[in-house]
Each structure stands twice: as C-alpha cells, then as structure tokens.
Image (cartoon, rainbow, N blue to C red):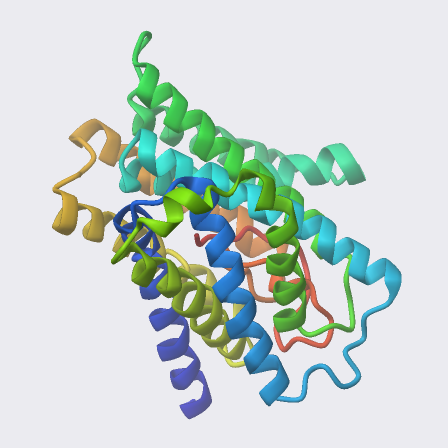
Length: 313
C-alpha cells in the first residue's frame, strides 16, 4: 500500500506539472516551432543525463528496427506538440486541452483501420457520446475562423499522438526513458529548418520558460510518470490522468481569465466518461499521458503494454 501511495503522489504531481504546460508555452513568447525545438533540446539534455546516471545506456535493447520505430514515433510526437501549441495561440488553453483529450477515440479508430481490430457496439456508443461532448465543448459557429482553426489543430494533435502510440507500441525490450530520448532527439534536425533563432535571441525571460518545458515538463515529468506506472493499477492511472485537463483549465482561468461557457462545460464530463469507458476495458496496464511518447509500450519499462488511450500534453 505504501508503494501504491507513493505512485499516486508521483503521478498526481506529474499530471499537475502537465497541466501547467500551456502556461509555459504562452509565457515563453516563442513561436510553436521554436517552443518545440527548444523543448526537444532541453528535454534531450535532461533525459540523457538521467539515463546516463541510471546506467540505462548499458544493454539498451535497441535494434535498427526498434530505433527506426522510435524515430518514426518521434516524428509524430514532435508535430503533435507543434499542432497543440499552435492551438493554444488560436484558442484558449482550456479549449485546446479538452479537444486534445479525444485521443482515445482516434486510437480506437486507427486500430480498426490499420489492424482490423473489432469495435464493439459499446465502444461505438461511447464514441458517439464523446462526439456529442466534442460538439458541445467546441461551441463553434459558422464563420468563427479562430475557433475552427483551434479545433482543427487540437484534433490534428490528437490524431498525431494516436499515430505515435500505434508505432511505439511495437517496441519491446527498451526502457521508455530511452524511447523518449530518441524521440526528442529526432525533433532537433526535424525542426531545425523551421526554427527562428533570430527571434529566439530576443526572448529574454522567455528562455526560462523554454528551459522549464524541457527540464520540468519533458525530464522531471516523464521520470515521475514512468516511476508511478510501476506502482499503480490501471484504473487508478486512468482516473489520475484526468488531473491534467482539470489543472490546465484552472490554470488557464487563474492566469488568463479564460474559461469555457456553461454549454461547453456540459461536454467535458461526456468526453471524460467516454474516455474512461473506452480506455479501461481496452488495456490491462497503464495508459500514459498524451504528451508522453507512448512509454507503456516499451517492454522493459515497468508499465509497458497496450495502446490504450492516453492524456497529457
């Protein structure tokens, strides 16, 4: 029980940190491409140092095929971040975060399309509930260009994360910290042509926020999550994962005064409930936060296994 209590504290703290990610992105004042590039840079330093200190590079378990899959998953993860951070600029953090949490349903649909996995009538029903919740949350009206753009970007980010999960779930025998390290390293050459170093040079205090995204939200947060997965049952992980959107919505309101309307708020519990119903029956192991590079699929990791829905940025 003591071990589970520690895991609960670790995962709760990780989700609280994840909920503040949008604030760091906005406060940095950098473009989405610059934010992701430097998140990858500082995140690689943090994860690399941690992995080196723990001796994870010895017997790492990578083969050329596994390394290629990790890199492909990294492509999807990196552009998932770009889309999500662009969504923060088009709409509020709260709006983008809630829409982003439709990932479990794209994962189910991808499983059906790519692997011919059967979608039960119950899952179809919960997908319909989630769609109804999405319609309520979006509150988008014809001609509302900004909201339509934000909605599309957040949905695009959710699809990209689901694709990363599908790819990364095929990797076994490699610690999730090393998979995450490969994926952020992939982001450096991938985003180099899009990074604006001239604009970055004038960020001033923004550099502190960018460093925080890499060291806190990509280094510390992942370490806490991966440690917690080994100690907690799936049901508790699935429930605690929703701490992230709750904190993100509170932080968005507290810092920027943004909040979703009453009608939009009615859609939030529909998405949350449908997400839990789709996630829990689909896996016997821990679902990872959406922002994380599908750690549960890395065989040597404590919480390795199926491509269940995931939720964090």
